[in-house]
Length: 462
Image (cartoon, rainbow, N blue to C red; front, side, top):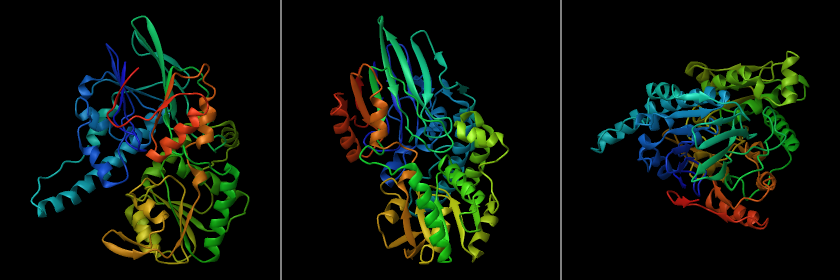
């Protein structure tokens, strides 16, 4: 068989694997490229393959860098089945509809510039109609349900511990009376995080394609992040400032709400309004409430007592633009959670523009900031930024809690790999910046497993 990476090769975003056998062609994920402009331009380019040639798509989870180009794939001729968990299907619809709205508005702005420069007009990468068409191809598969997609390929989903509905994928592929087992990690989560179940052990694979987002780093203990989060809230409140949190709408936002609910119930945080200023995050939170079967035991037990972990006094959902704008009039200390998580789009950009020059305020990063994004530059010390047509000085407190990450660190990744018995013939290191891939490959090699770091578009013969 031949496996090619058409994304997430020596970079974190754009996850897309092509698996070609003598008879069947399969994709694992079809995500958007995010970050620097040269990366995002790839979203408008050809896939590097003909979508009409593929029979199946297996989706690990609903983050945009894993599902974001599915409507484009269908628009360009893919008519196969798309397999995912139920929660992933529901979240994917929310994510893609939001992406379609952003694409529409971005295209209007882009075409104004193109008209001035005498360039041809550009169409959105996909529309809301394209999203609805793509969703008709989805088929729901349960975690740990072994399913045969054809005479030669058996697939099983395993808990990834990353976000609601996320899975690792094991494929058993028969060719010429020989069976090859290939595992795709998707994104692997930290153990002991709130809400979702922990990562499952798979234990059997000839070849493993593993993410390495934090392959060169260690996270502080999960419990420490709660204490640090609470301290930042209290410090910002004492200064009379606003705490702005750029947050991914799925999982990260719900983890923040879960912690804030605990702080409020224990009366250990100051009484202040918390604005969830993201229509997408609000919709995603409602999906979380629907899929309690995906929770870990602690959260399920909490829900069964009648406690909603995503609601507490002072929490205000702001869906409309008018409601969002009114937050700027608030003079009391408050918390604002808004997307996008890397500050590349969404309402957080407006909050940063209006508030980042005030030294009483705090901007708190709780997730990965890809190179080239606004969040990356602010986190790395830029003192002046250009945002929404304005130059603003960065005077606010800039804080970061990396342990909020939905990705395992290198110890977590190595721990997952050590349960494969016998050891895989080779582990392919993907979904990480190049320095992270190299660092993690060295660590895996020390365990006696051969590794390889694929390049974008490189054909791998297994």
